[in-house]
Length: 419
Image (tube, rainbow, N blue to C red; front, side, top):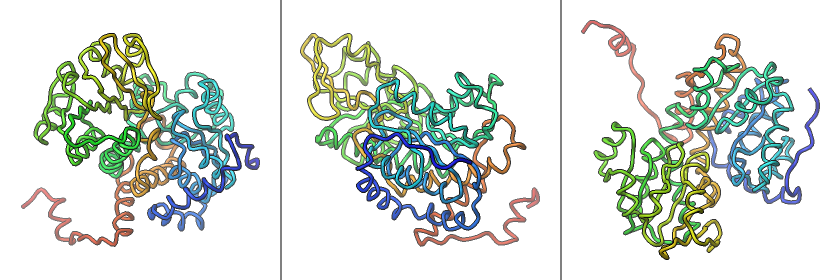
């Protein structure tokens, strides 16, 4: 395998600043650090190239460096144009990882970075939103042959993968990391719940207490956003299309109603569905003067920006990450971060302790694919339970928490149909 390729970053002189951020994150990622100790000796990825498309910030850099320490040649790009931190990208490039990423690139440049990453001919892939896998299948099938498989981190990406699998078009195995217990119970709920409000609060500098917050979608991310909004003193409304999730939101103590009604009441709207136009043209007409809209889904399609712009008579940037749209009747509606991920554009993303678990799942799942790809075949696979459980064990150990173990008799009892 050739030596490290030349990175494409905005400013190499930012590397020392980026290194400080990476080192801070690493101090708070004990699960990854424990895995690193094992993998430095074992080198399970020796001789393999790993391509990564993730939100390129400090915690992600720790994952990339772990895979490097496990023997891989690592190539990384961003998974969202506005979530790359240029100083972290520079720091990672100085550490021997190939980086193709800049903050806020032109659309053509963003796509080029994805292409450059794939053109290194990776053996394994870690994806966030499914861009690498989609490009491989739709545009660059000539690069498919060498790919053994990989992992996907998000709900959106897994939906795309399952569509490929259903159409019998998926060409290699992918592990659905997002669906692991140690991911969605913690990353989606506590990570998204905290980081979304970090981003909104940083962008707006407004109080949440006393306001009406509309959470659009009550999956695990929506649960986290609603829970934290309630903790900040908001009245919370949930909108849903799934009757089971809507019932759960009701029993969790939140008000449930259609968006057409919620649009009239909300002060702050947060979309977390993975679907398009969940806040649409008809809703803008009913919103209060001063309403704030933020998205926490992977793509910037959940709030219909084109319809909002078409209805507005003018717009202006009133604060970093806030665009104000003035409507014909004088109402002002505010869109945060151009409808992109508010927690990563206006904030620093999930806390390091949360991403520690998610990236441990990514690492151990990637090793599993590397060792078993020929047995798995071109399917979307759940994270094997022993990996999920191992990450939780490492997490508890890092916290100094011990738990009970079943006796042999208890295990036999549960395994038997006899009383």
